[in-house]
Length: 330
Image 1 (cartoon, rainbow, N blue to C red):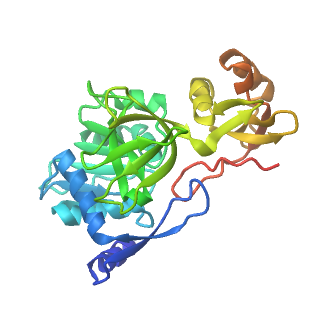
Image 2: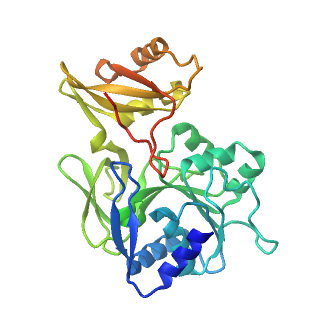
Image 3: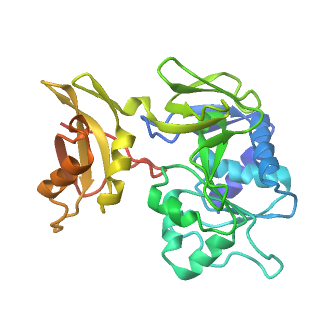
């Protein structure tokens, strides 16, 4: 891969910093200079937590345009992992990437779509289940996918982090008896909240400055290291004086909506803002109908949570990393 060779050269040159770009999930992707020594620190933190050692096999199947892919390579170089590189795609396990001398993949990082696709093909599913540590980031993991991953024999983790923290600073176990809805921060990370409930991250080994996020969280009541993400501050809809979290509406609808969709806000003269839904329905499809969805809304949602505006699109707008762009085009 040319991108891999280019990044290896960039990593090994004498420059102490690298230019990376944010994913663009909350706006246009932004350039960000990051220090290589902090990337190495992040790599060591993850490898130490997962017990990865020199000679273990890692799989790089994420694009090197963004921090998640870059950090997989840096973890391998920093810890001496055997790195297997495949072209980023929706089915990274379509081929067996192991050599005769390797028993399994010890470590891999994927986005939810890659995991979901791999589960649909028996051979890929077996390879996925054999990965000793699988970390999943870059998007929400819905309840159906989480339930399937809970049965995996090895460790599957959901990650919490961002470009500014050089990938993740907290993990949540998805598989086995240790499966949890709570993220737990690494020991070197301190957490707090703003007055409006947004998470504040102090991770000096990977980020020089204290970082105030837009993620509304709750702590578990026992430790300020364990938290659950309720949604983004940007996605709070204030409708008629009532605050509605878009992600919570999606969670309630998820089991009853069999097509891709997202919840967002739309301007309204009476209420200021109202809940709106954008639904993917390709040309020629007859379902879902607006009337059918309204019945679901009335059954499942409180009155102010019910989407008052509906729009059908052929494709949901996505960022380059596969995250939904929650826009409402009037």
